[in-house]
Length: 168
Figure 1 (spheres, helix red, strand yellow):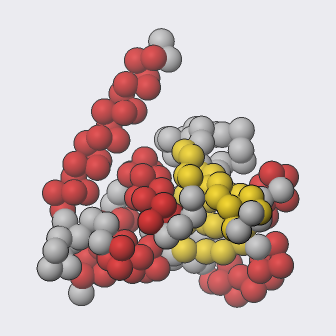
Figure 2 (cartoon, helix red, strand yellow; figure 1 turned 180 degrees about the vertical axis):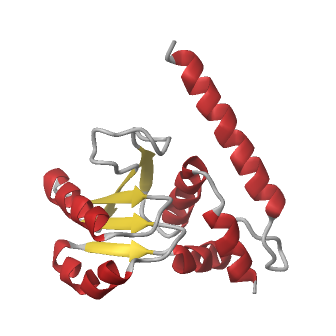
């Protein structure tokens, strides 16, 4: 039941909070340095085709780059196509789309077609599982830490307000 609760909390989270959570998951999972790119609000466009995170690391002595698109919507074919284009354009080694929601039926049906383009999907259920497994946003007994998520949203609002002040 905890993962259903976690999934519900994730689906109610802001894009900024999802960016921070995804960044933490990627860091703890060994994706190296995670950079938050341009977009922080859902209505903004970014010069990186809507991608919000980039991970850079090394595998042995080889550099590795991963482009991560975080969305607060269902994963659709159009989004997967955009991610394929960004992976090719940036010469990234891998693309990941992260959503707290589900993958649409058409995207799920054609998901295998995107493997050659090195694009993977982390949907809401998998994101909730990863957060729980890594101990992010959960209390020691495994329950969802609502205080953590509330504080995360508050920090997000303060950062957004601060950035708007600098844009004047």
